[in-house]
Each structure stands twice: as structure tokens, then as C-alpha cells.
Length: 358
Image 1 (cartoon, rainbow, N blue to C red):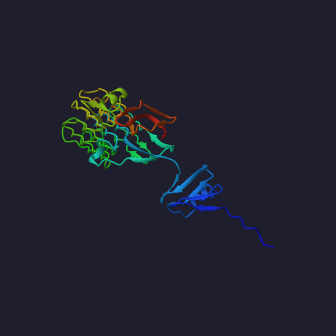
Image 2: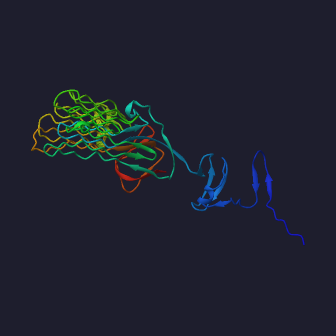
Image 3: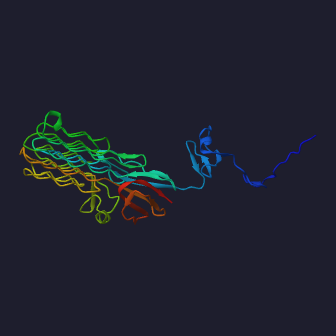
């Protein structure tokens, strides 16, 4: 008995065109089965888990027919709080960017390529909580929290040092380092390509400035916070409307260090708050959505409690072609989307969630 061999009719036309009489049925795999394959660039399958035709690009699988969106970013972490009782300024949150300047004197980073429809995680870091001295017991500042966009993480700023004993007056390491407190504290270290170190104690009944994304914090005799960096990913008018960054003239600064106590030291441009000049006064908080460091507070009375300035919260700002539309997921708070020069820019101001593009 001879079995019947059935074939589809395949016709070749000009060039590389091929005609198949019946529908072409690709080999089907689940995602688990697909990932177990030994694949090379050009392999095509039908993914039954995702109900998508997928092609291997040589390193990963991509859905056929999807577009890729190029996204530029500014990611700023929460700033550290200042120290209390002859406290130093808090360090600014780490800053990473593809636009304007990045932190720590590093080179600008590269935009990321996002497959349309894919959700990417965003987390906005909180500023470090206030530190409160209790009579004669000092309190060092608290570090800010990290901000995240996809694989990009900016490190929270370091808390400022405070008068106490030996190493307890040192500033904490962070995105930018906290300043060193009275009476021999050294500044905390910054994170490479994100921010600078805090200043160290040199003289006086004072605290040092916290580091900024653009400069080291000043020594205690001056106490000013390190300046932040300019990133005009949002125009100065749009940044003012959204209350993100610190606008000076036509430039927008982010991630300035907090000022040290005892010398009325100012915070660095970029949202850092000033340290207290007089005795027994609380320091002001750094500005929200700047990543600025909080100012140091000073009390010399063993019966008076004072609080340092809290660090400023961070921010994530995303820039992408104006032909695309962003979707901001539940859990995130975004500002308005601005359009200019062929791009849209969206600031994300708080929360944790996902963003995607179409």
C-alpha cells in the first residue's frame, strides 16, 4: 500500500518573492519552551503564552511589528537630611542623566531603547527624615532613598554628621556625601558619576556643607552646600510650573547639598536648604523634587532639642519623541506632559509603578 504524499504548491516569482498557496503555520512554543531553545538571529516562532509572533535578534526575542521608543532621562534620588547639634548639611541625592549634565563630574549617559507596550519600573526616592537632638545627645542625619527608572538607579544622598564622639561626627556616604560635623568629622563619600563628597570640619563651632551633584561641600568654616548641576530637560518655565528643580535665571538646577549649622551657611543651588546660624533653631527642609540635602541644626544647650532639615525628594523626568504617548501606571504621580522641538517631556514626582509608551 502506498501512502499519499500531500504538498503545498510553492511558486517562485521575480527576485526573492515566494508564493505559498496555504497559510504558513509557524512552529509554536510557550515562553518556557522558547527560552530553552538554542536560537540565532533571524529565528521566528509563534509564542503561545503571549499570543505573539516573535523573532530573535541575536541576543533576545522581540515581538514582530512592535516599535522602539528612544527615551532620555533625568533620575535624581532623595537627598540626605542634615545632622543635629552642631550638625552638618546632608548630601544631595545621586543624579544620572542623558541631558545637560550628569552628577559627580561624569559623562552623560546614553538614552535607552524601549519596546512600545513594555512597562518599565519607576520609583521616586524620598528625602532623608529629620534628625532630632535630645538634649546633649546629637543625631546624625538620615540617608535619602534611591530613585529608579528601569535599570537606572540613582543613590540616596548621605546624612550629615553631628557633634558626638569620634566617628559619629563623620558624614554618611551616599549619592553625594553628607558633611562632617563638629569637632573633627570628615565628609561622606559620593557615588562615582552621581555626586561629590561632603565637606570636612576645619574650624569653628560649626558643621560642614553636604556634597552636591556638581561640587564638594564646603568645609565647616564656610559650611555651604555643594552646588547641584544644570539639566534643562524641562524648560525653566515648565520646571517652575511643576515645582521641580531650582530655577536660577534660565537654568534649572538639581541635587544641591545642604548647608552646615553655625555659620548661616546656604544650601547649594539645586534645592539644598540652609543650616541654622543661631543656637537652638530647627533647620528648614530641602525643596521637594530636587534631591537637595537638608541643612544642619545647632543647639548648645543640654536641655534643648532641635531638628535638622529633611532631605528633598527625588524626581524622574522622561523625554521622548512627540509621536509617542506615555502611559503612567497606578502608584505614580506625574506632572503635565510638555511638547517642544519634536519631543515630549513628562516629570514623575512621587510613588512607585510602571510607565510604558505607544
